[in-house]
Length: 105
Image (cartoon, rainbow, N blue to C red; front, top):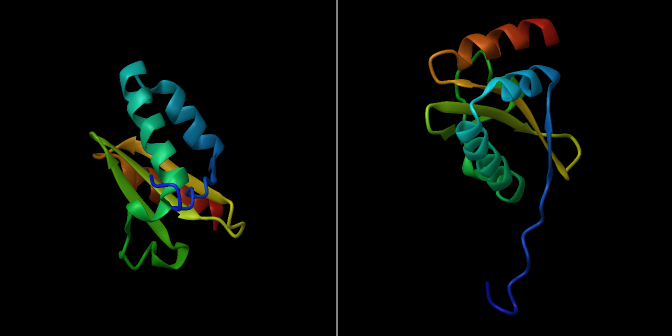
């Protein structure tokens, strides 16, 4: 980063209670990879791709790959925060997200 380049704004990453429980279950090596990815999201939240599925589009959700793990998040109403809605294996992430969406609606 050059002398005149502004330092990127780091956002606070908030995990739902469900995400915190799922995160604690991960193997330590996977946790380190997830932590690194969450740090990237905090600085550059636009790095994920938008979920275009009609079911989730109203929530403005984004997804990012982290090995076999997927992290689903959205921009918070507070510009200094990003909300993580799901952390799970790629085979289960959308089931988890669908369940979370049904209880949070």
